[in-house]
Structure formats: structure tokens, C-alpha cells
Image (cartoon, rainbow, N blue to C red; front, side, top):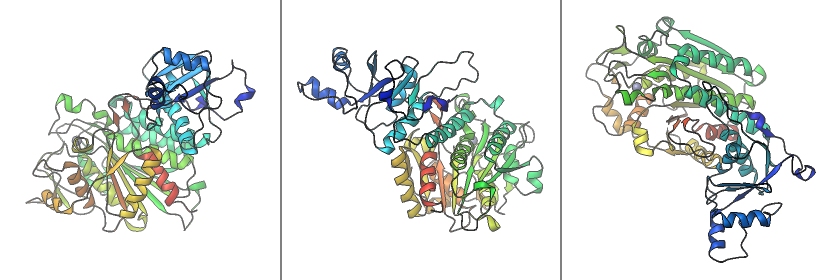
Length: 481
Ligand SMILES: [Zn+2]
């Protein structure tokens, strides 16, 4: 799990004795290159205090190169490699690798890099240890003086929540468990939640959510969360609505996946997990917006009552959907949820969808870079800036409308899959677009929600994606100043 208590508020480290806290010096690889090529006057990096000579000499005799992931620890402090300086999470290695104790960073960092260094320390201590009998000890960090530690802790808590939800195996993360997690968050943050479950999804007109989830022994449901600052309405506030795909396990339905194909499918609720993480960040920071979170939550399972390929199912919007493949289920449950999100007086000023939607998105951009779709250039531009500032990578893809013709059906309004294998992530986004009124400010993310290998601050497993960038954009552009 993730302990935010490992980050302590800044204090003047000169008042501490050596035994109380140890210095960390972050060093760049380029400086070591320079020193080794004979430039004796170069120093690895500017720090306050400077790197002790003994530590510097020791690093040279130990072939320390300053690459990310390198660490050297002595009684006089520790060196951490920052590589070329492009990875602000490089500091995270200290939390797990240094002898248990209290540390502080000696490098002079601007506000943003100091924030990311402190955040990376907390994120680096994350370990999914719910089922482990022994917990690994980790170290504490005194935050740099220019860090708002409450803000770092809220962010780390939200990412820890997202990772935990994704990492928890489905036997402990079925639809009713995910509802309990959402309910706990709502109680903590004074938000209001209602759930429409089982056959009520039929009577209240969510036929696609019901069809996808009805074969599971754990009933399908739609979770609807509303929150506003201090629980008090304000007519001027902007409405931000987040819709997250919550497929707790996806075996593909009757178009069943292979064993390898379903190995990671506990993470198919990663959109819902990231939605709750983003909601946690917004609520804990008391952002001045009206927040709504809508989560269609199901297990795509097989039983006698499972929906079939070739079935035609009505949608909340009224369009009929021919099922070309039961494994393209995420877009079905999102379709009803997105229609619901944009009805009547609920029209949002910003509609966000987060979903582990297609394998095609990973073929295009790999596991780390998140494709997003948006027809509004102003929103896309704001997101791009926020993404760069927060080191939370996203990449815009086109909602190429001519491809929508691939979703045509001979017997229904639309098919849930395309007749060919081209542009799968774009096609999925175009399917969703059919269920959203024209002109809605909508931004859709086809996330992976998983990190295939560990890096500093980013352990292998469930991962938060795009939500730090989204939080920054919402804070800057959607709150009442
Ligand atoms: Zn699927």
C-alpha cells in the first residue's frame, strides 16, 4: 500500500544533527561523463551543501555513472542518479533502496520539480502487499521547502487508491466490491452516491449495461456520484463529469478470450479506478467545481443468459446495437453511461471518459503513452500543456469521422465492432461519440491502466494514467478563480 506519512514537512535541516537526517545528492550522467573525460573542475551537480569530497571520490572509484536507477550510500549521505534529467521520478529509488531512515534532498529544485520529487518518493514506496505476510520497510523524506505537502499527499493517495483497485484480483474486486470502495470514498469526502443495480437497470433504461453484466453472479450496476465543495450549491460553478469503464473481469463473453488474452483482465475496471482516483484528487483538494462520476460496473461472464454475438439490443439513447462481438463490451456499457451523463439539466461543461477500451491503442502507442480523442482544439491544447507540466504523458489521436461507416449494421442502427481490423482505437471512440449529443465538450482516454515493468516511482502493476494531467487542467481552467 502507500503511506503518505513518509513525507514530512520541510524543516531547516541545518538544525538537525547528522544522525537525525541524511542528505541526498541527485547527480546527472552528463557531468560524470565530463569528469571521466578529464575535466577535473566539473562537479556532478549544484547542491546545498556541496557534495562532500569523500563521497564524490568514492563515486568515481565505484564507477558511478549518474544513470537513473543508480544509488550510492555512505555515512556522509547518498548519491542518486538522475540520468539526463528528463525523468523527475528518478528520486523514488531512494525510498526503497536506502537504509531505513530520514532523508532530505540537497539539490535546488524549482517548484514543479520539487513537487514531483516529493510525489515520486511516496509513489516509489507503493507496494501491493494486501496478500503478503511481510511488509518491506521504507524510508522517510523531509520535503523541500517549496513543496505543498498536502497537495503531494492528496495526489499520492489518489494514485495509491487507483493502483490498489486495479491490482486487487477479481475475487476481491467484483462489482459489489467496487461499489463498496466507491461508497467508502464518498463517505470520506462527503459525496452523494446512488446505485442502480440488477433488473432496475432494465426498468430505469440502461439496457446495454444490463445485457453485458447479466451473466455474472455479481449483479451489474451503475454508480452515480455527485459532489460539490462544502456540499453547497453554486450557480456559477462548472460541471465536470467523469465516466469510467468498470468491467471487473472480462473473459470476453461468448466470444471468449484465450487464456493469455484474459490473464490481465482484472484490470478492465481501470477506467473506473482512474475515475475514482481523479475524483479523490478533486474532492480532497476541494476544487471549486460540481463533480459527477458515473461508473457502469459489470463482469463480462458466460452463462445461459449471456448476451450473444448477433443479438440486437436497444440502448438508452434509442439507437439499436447489433452485437458483432461480445468482447467489445466496454463501449456498450459506456454508451448508456455517456447518454445518461448528458441528459436534461445534467449537461456537463467538461465530459471525460476513461476506459481500458482497446488493444489497438497499445499497438499504436504502447503501454505508457495514453491516446486521447477530442474534437475541441482548445481543450486538447490545455490538456497537452497540463500533460507536459505533470509528466503524465498523453497523445492526441483523430476522431476520423469517415471511419464511422465501418460500424454500420444491416439490421440495427449500429454494430459494436468494425468489419475490419484497422484503426481499432479510433473506431471505439467513434462508437462512443454516437451516444453523446453533438457539441458536448468531451474528451476520451483509451488507457492501459497497467505498467508492464517497474521503474522508479512506478512499480509493475496497476497504474494511474492521465489523471494528474486532467487534475491540473481542471484546476487551472474549470474552477471559479
Ligand atoms: Zn472485452
